[in-house]
Amino acid sequence: MNKTIIYYTANREKFEQKIIDDMWPKAGDIPIVSVSQKPMDLGTNICVGDVGYSYLNERKQILIAAEAAKTEYVVTAESDFLYPTGYFYFEPKGANIYRYENVWIMWLDDRKRRNFYRKTATSDGAQIVRREFLIDLLTKYLTPYPGWYRQNDRNVDPRHSPYHRVDFEVINSEIPCVSIKSREGLTYITGVHNDDTKEVLPYWGNVNDLRSKFLLSSSESNGPSDLQGGTTFPSRRPEPEHVLSPRTEIRSGVGSKLSKVKSDSAKIESDSKGKVSSPKTSLEPDSEKSVVNTKKHLIKKYGTGDPLVALGMLRHNLYQLFAELGFKVGAEVGLFRGRNARQMFREIPGLKLYGVDAYDDQPYSTRHKTVPRYDRNRRMMTDRIRGRNIKVIEKFSEEAVQEIPYDSLDFVYIDGDHSYDYMMTDIILWSRRVRAGGIVSGHDYVKPGEYRHKYDINVKEAVDDYIRMHKISPWYLTDKKGAVNKSDKCPTWFFVKE
Image (spheres, rainbow, N blue to C red):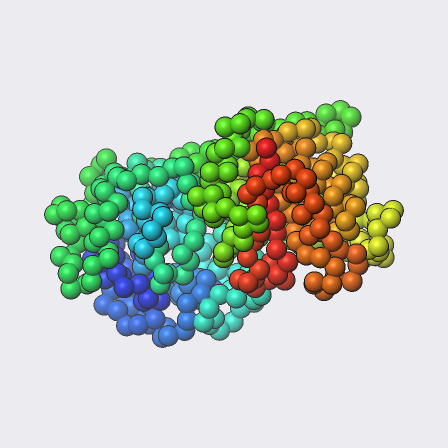
């Protein structure tokens, strides 16, 4: 046996015993190392005590389990995941990481999301990793973060996961894993395909039947056979049709989706004159259907208003929305130090991005910086977006926009010069580059004196005037009340291009 199951938990989920009851017979003879915050009778148990519930702690527990295991590979198992039988008996073929692509989300107590929803990306909780590789990866990742962290903190937490930009092979199976989302979990919101939902999944059955089993108290559960309506789970090696096999292609570890993505994805092409060629967007431009579909999606998700503050929505959630809508081609006006562009790539699988920044003062701008400061910003930006599928256009916005074909973008995010005139110019010019059904958006919906900026800033009036003159409805703002990062304290605005 060359595998060990590593099970990690903060012991918060009320239904955890049912997860264990489901997993235990499927593990068969595979050894288990469990790392928990309360003592457990599950394989070799290591109890770390009540150290808090955070991503950093979760990864520290994984590292502890990996170090305690003795086999070549380890198989991850989480306290809110349901695994098909063949998951534990997948045979690695020599790669460092194998990830399960067929993962679906089931919310226990969400009144709107009542079906199974397909997850947009792979999960840390459904992977098989070479043990020594995992130990090395997590040790380097966690070294700057000694001790335990009682909760997530955006000001402290790493900007990316330890698997960021790490290649992996995809495990292909028709039988899915199911991730259960409850209010007690580490994350309640996750990226899903809102247009890919099902009431029934192979092996697991009807979503309402499965959900009802986990909403019952532990005393009402009939054990592992209860999950499939009386079908007993096999206690040993699965039947041949359940054995999983890896696909031959390697996919980038950054939010890989079901479409094939090679680790050396092509850059946005340029013609011999240096002009950027028009990329194919995810939907046909100027389509009335696209406008209707995008608006329906936003209204269903957030409601309607002029503007409507999307409760709990922060800037990175906007990029998750772009991913849900299938957006692939976008532009950011005002790259600054590249932090926001990097976040876009993290949240939007397969993204092709145009990044615009002259790294110089606009001729009539009231915002002035020294040349060394612009040079430093440029270096930071370059470091953060290195290796990404991005075309950097180092020109002023009104010049750079001439290189972008009309109706060629799925979205634009405007964060350039914040004075009224330049802001209005950017909205007018760049909205014309967004196709019908795409989204026009931007940062810092504030007026002079409302925030810490010392230079002329009047994004609010420019946006308000454009919205009013073009009779745009509905339109939206992110929720600054939930802000942790400075960038979220100034709301982001966005609307659907018609």
